[in-house]
Amino acid sequence: MLTPTQIGEYEDRGFTLVEGAVPPNLLTELRAGTDEIVEAACGLTESDERYDLEALHTPEAPRVRRLKSPYLFWPLFAKLVREACILDAVEDLLGHELRLYNHKVNIKAPEYGAAVEWHQDWAFYPHTNDDGLAAGIYLDDVTEENGPMMIVPGSHRGEVYDHHADGYFCGAIDPTACDLDFGGAVPLTGPAGTMTLHHVRAVHGSDLNRSSRPRRFVIQGYFAADAWPLQGYLNNFDLETFDAKIVRGRPTGAPRMADVPVRIPLPEALNQGSIYENQNTLEHRYFATYEEVA
Ligand SMILES: O=C(O)CCC(=O)C(=O)O
Image (tube, rainbow, N blue to C red; front, top):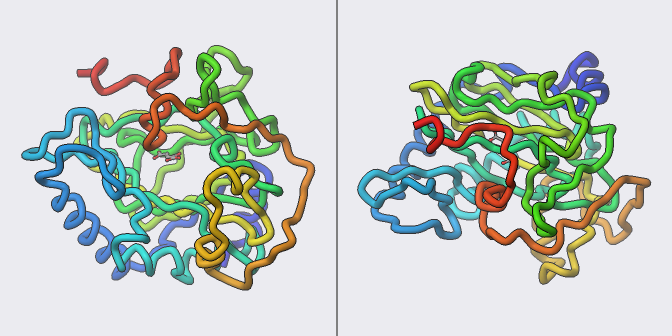
């Protein structure tokens, strides 16, 4: 499905974009389905297994920051993690045997959607090899104003950066303690229906939504089936659940080992929950918070 130029860009820079990857009828279904799901957060008083709520959420005026593992709860999203229009592109980059690793919808609501500090997905879940990526789908038109994902080109070939604060994992890179060129980061913009593909080691982040338009972003993380999570056994590893996440090809009990840089994300983050909670302990933030801007 991908062109040689897109594959080359992914290999050289650590990311590529596919405009119009999601057909219009599916896009309409996803947008309407997401609206309904977000409205159903009305009445919730705190985050739960499905919803991650902004600090300023109230039961009357819901502010949903993220849908957590939506494929487990809503059929529309269960179908999406296996959609050919996504998996064909992922297969071009990772091969035919594929496992879903994680799934979420990040919602940057107009004028207050939270920033995500710079990080590498690899720092959260190192595997035996780094044939992993995140396929993202923009449900809204994304411009520089509504918090596009930004990626430091070529960073997928570099080191794995320290994502700790005061000795605990915090899921973010301290921008004052590394040599990364954040000014050279590329904003991934595109119309609704655009798919982003970024390497699991690529450094990325995103600013606040500073516009009056939403930025809803579905993220589906995949690995080659022979990449096994290094922390699997620590996290109550269950083979049946692991194998049920195969979306193409067959599972294997023979992990492929690669010479990859690894840091273990322990001791665990002091603020458990989503990445937004983990990153709260980062002392030097790169992006402004909504509270600061307000
Ligand atoms: O929503 C974004 O802009 C980035 C999201 C991200 O990197 C994450 O959720 O891990």
